[in-house]
Image (cartoon, rainbow, N blue to C red; front, top):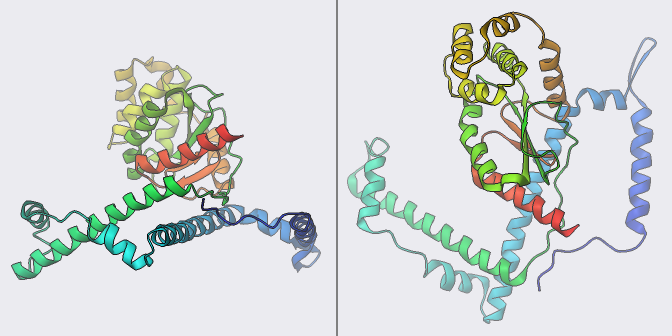
Length: 338
């Protein structure tokens, strides 16, 4: 059975970890700069750029993860080839190259017709050849993934690489699902953000697929360059004040036209008492609360929207359901093994 290399056993790693931690702690207290009587410590510097450092750590993990799965794939292919007394190249030729489905003329024509503008200046024969090569490449990639999936099932590689996990609070914000669910999914979002709107059906799909296994929390992160994002967040909180957050939120996310009259029209649609809502809308009652959401987001590396955290694991941007499923399944598997 294939195994991912483990850490060296014994006390040496523990000693190294303790010494490294001591050096970091000592360095954090040392001055990074001195201006007159004022000292800027490394600790203060790191706190100042904490969000950027967290994003860098996340990027580093994604690079390591991609590289690790490339190496795992290579090793799985090598093991399968060895079992058949073949080279990796021979195995891939037999199992991928020769078994990948070939596109038929109807598929080729359909892709060509969908991309005619792209081929406007290309001779028809060359265009058809390009489309054919593209479809063959896609078919080989699908077949390669099928082969790898079967080999992973057979050899069961154990992955020890762990993602950075952050402490992300819910901020007392509106939520769906049981707070004791094994998965907590927190979103930092902006009502004027196009990608946030495209993420809405994906989140609904996640909640439908996982049911009581997921606790979903919505937090505000209105971006400075979206003039209507903060007033929209205020309107949603005014709806929350009357127990109508989710009904209001859904219609607000579906709206491309954000202004006061629209906020009031949505309030009427969901049955909110208008006098109280209108008074709330023109107040600054929730200004500090929105600022706290923004500050909490920045503290864990949020710089754009939407940003999601699955049990503290970050997903940046609007992602397909498959990406959420991947991380949620990993977390459920990890929890089951504890």
